[in-house]
Image: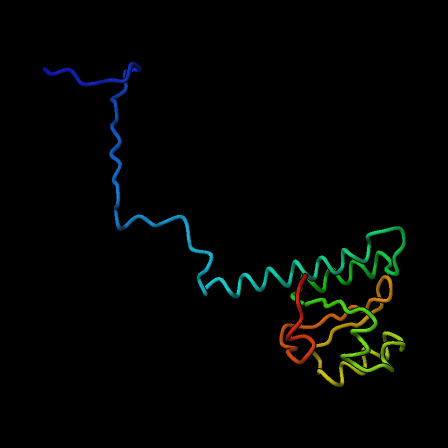
Length: 149
């Protein structure tokens, strides 16, 4: 009777066959330049930009945000809302000089009348910045040409 091959433990030795260039095996890399990634790339870009905008309100010694307000704005981002940041000059240029010095509630009412119910909230931030939370379907200017930095 022929002896069977073992690997020293008494078990039958197994051989592994590897196949090369098998067209049925999936690849594990993709080209980043594919247009199919545009939606995912833009989603990441505005989420990261929104988080950076909120984070910038807490750098330094003082902030206008209470912890409750900060958590509210973080929840906005987590629920798919985009947070845009404008300095006072940009806010006056895009929405009107009278709104750059108005209260956030009055500015929110004006912006909401102009852009619709997609405007979720407006507040003043650090160093005279304005934060505007919108849904993704607000596409008017200045929101359609905003650069997420």
